[in-house]
Length: 60
Image 1: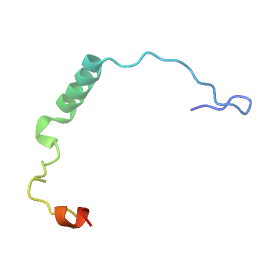
Image 2: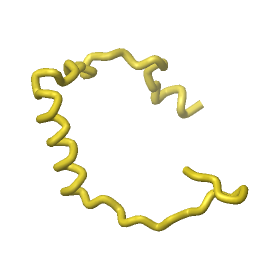
Image 3: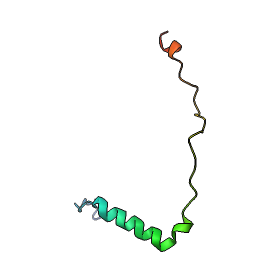
Image 4: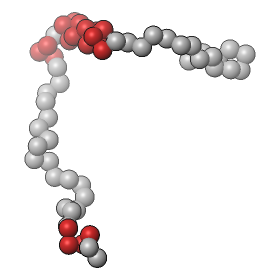
């Protein structure tokens, strides 16, 4: 952002196309090396921080 005379001008820009963004991400992966990616986390058995939903309490 830039401030010009106390105002922040808004400029219309062309949105990135999905293909272009994907190509940039893949190029960055190639640049840093695929072996340097962060480890994957397994969230399939994580416990929720809230109590389980009880259908009986809903009717009350």
